[in-house]
Length: 398
Image (cartoon, rainbow, N blue to C red; front, side, top):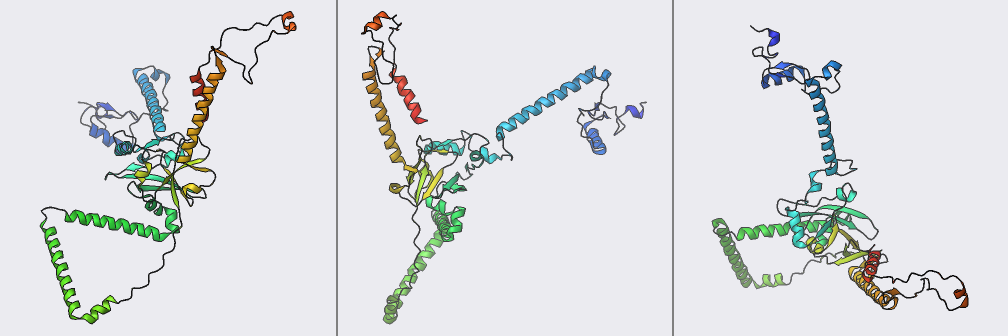
């Protein structure tokens, strides 16, 4: 007969098969171990700071304890490194999954970008522009853009959840600042959007084939409209005085609409070598997708809303057409300079005397013959014109 001290400390039926790593309590099964944790409030984890005698360290249990401790430290370091790499260095707040949506090559956002030839230049992780980007795709196959608006005073404002099918003007009217400045425009934009959705739903309901309720409603509406038109015609013929009064009704005076401030929309072109801001003029009725086709943006697009037309931009701004024209002229000028350098500067594999270069030694005077001649390298200096061209182009594009 076994003693109670030799049996499981929870059920006192079986002999203990397991031992708690923290308090060394013996249990016979998993249910007994869980009841032990509840009773003793034990977490079951080894205490790395527990004092051990020197004789206990040189045992298989002591070696196993040290090995598990070192492996746990290594595992925690790997998890911390992976978490830091995923979240971004220097981020003070935990980054949600929305910041990493769209990076999947097979995702909806990447397919949308490839279809419309839109390139997104990603900023380094942890930068403010990367953390503020919330561009993503939805379950209904819509793309919700993050858009930056900049006015003529240089004030910047971010707007999230911009649908790719909305126009530039409607999107700007829905921005927070524009809502406060012109609440009527935002209300009209919402009304147009609701009307469009209602018309689409009605159109879908009317086009359902084989639906008896839709066909009956449509037939009843046609009959009601025809009978109403016949009654109006009959009443108008029978009472000519009332019909003449109806024709001569004076329309109510319409309220004068306030003139809207004239504004022009531009997309900022990134990756240019110009000191000025290069802007791409846009039509107000074009959608976000149409304005971004064949373009490159830094995390999310930046739009300028200015009261200046493309031909009257203030200093510091330049249209894309002007920028490309200047770049073409610079490239032609460099090409001509290289051709002249090849024709006049390179002769039989050597370099002729050009301004700014040291002249070749002359031996025409007697003093030169009397003095000790200076050693001159007679080997021709080879010049690669392609290297000069590449160097000049790199300097221009910096």
